[in-house]
Structure formats: structure tokens, C-alpha cells
Image 1 (cartoon, rainbow, N blue to C red):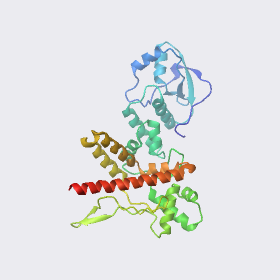
Image 2 (cartoon, one colour):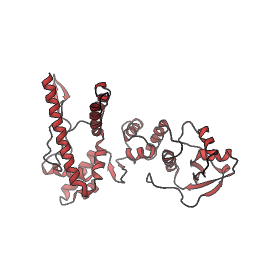
Image 3 (tube, rainbow, N blue to C red):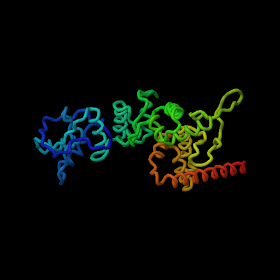
Image 4 (spheres, rainbow, N blue to C red):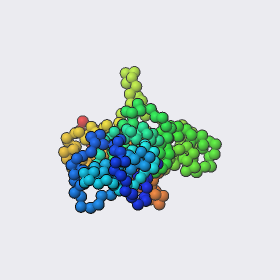
Length: 333
């Protein structure tokens, strides 16, 4: 089942006896809202049909409309049927209540995300986020808490329908084997065989051509008083030009996010217009590696050169920005 697709019967709605319907297993923790039910009883327009799971006769979407019909003394209600399994029926219930009607609370949506992670472990964080109406990062945190950081699947389906490995290292290793066996394959063929993005396949191929390991090395360490610590400051970029495949070592996105969050709490920044502008610019770079890969994969081919040029220019602006800020700090010490 693909989220976002219409999955219930599109035939004309049929009248169904209200007494035959069940309202169990709602995604709403607190149940129905009596005030919303009363408001529906006096609606001036005809209410849309409710959605019902055919095999269980459980209401998927429209419990408040059902209660309003009962208050009005109706014996029947207009129904469209859904014929999937119960796990998909729950997904549709959540998705429907995000799109219209009385919205689910944040607690409802987080609880639903946990349940969907359990029933659809192959779905990426972004798919679950799109269904539940919460941020992908929040979904990732819920997944970590529920699984203890372990995963039962080796790959996940993204919003674009592509399957990507959960462990990027395994995808890179497979790509290196594919390239060794058949160096003439295109980047897309390598990416498809290894379950990675074409840009990652490019990086693996370039690394192999330079005689390097296909996996990026961990951040460098330095020893202070015999203890290994992470070297401070930005790593020196080895990029020779956009698309060369040489990528600088970067801090994990969690570290960048934590640093930006600390800056957001600083009144000297958040209380000034220039400070807020800087925080917005820095927040752009807290997206995950998976999100960057998805963005790269979905750039239209006719825009690629322009986007690459702009990205390279922006990288240069940030590099100059960093140098000037460091110089200013040195001058004030």
C-alpha cells in the first residue's frame, strides 16, 4: 500500500445500517468530541460518506459523522468501503484525520506513528511523517525508542518509491563489488544494483579510482594527555569542483542540530533580526544525510547544472563567511 493514494472503494456510496457498524480502534486517545458531534448535527450542507473497513465493519473515518447521524435519529448512513488489511485500515484512519475534519492531537499522532512503525517497518521516516503529520526527525526518535536503535529490515521505501539501505555502509560495499565486476555500468545501474542513490554510486566509483576505501573515513581524532578527542573546527574540504566525488568529513547531523539548538536559546541571537536570519540559515544544514540524498535524487536533469553551480557558489560564500568570523574572533582576543 502506498500512502497518499486513494485506497477505498470509489463506487457510489451505499446506505448501511448504523447498528451494523463498529467504532473500535480509533487513533484518538481521548475518543470523540461531543461539541464537534453537535456542530455536525446542525451542518447546512450534506456531510460526506464515512469510510468503513468492509471485513470488520469498523469505521475508519467519520466516527463524529456517525454519532451526529445517530443523534438525528437516522437508521442508515452513507458509506464507502475499504478492502485492505487492518494495519492499512489504521494508516488510512490516521491519514484521513490529518487531512480534514477534527485534527488529531500531537499525542495522537505520535502514538499513531509508533504503531505504524511497528506495522510498516519498511516505510522511511519521511513516509510515516507524511501520514501522521509530524516531523521526520520526530518519527526517527520514536523509531529509536521503540527499537532500541536496532532494525529488523535492511532497507526502507522512500516517498519517491525507491528502496534504500538502512545501513549506508552496506550499500557502498555492494556498489564497490558491482563496479569491480563490471566497471562499464552506468551510475544508475550501479545505484539500482546496490540500493543506493546515483550520487552515492558516483562517490564510491571516484573513491575506487583514487585507490581509496569506498566508505568515508570517520572524523579525525587527536590525542590530548593520552585521551582521544574529536579534533575541533571544520575539516578542510578536499572538493576540487562540484561532482568530483571528493567530499569533506563532516560532523554528524545530530551534533550540528544540537549546536544550532543551543544557539537558538541564546538571547543575543534570537532577539535580533540579523541573529534570527543567521539561525534560519544554519537550520538549513540540520537535515539528515538521507534527506540530502533524496533532494539530490529528485533534482530534474535539466536543472542539475544550474543547481550544482549555485550550490558551489553557496559553499564558497559559507567558506568566506567562516574565515571572516574566525578572523574577527582572533582580532578581538
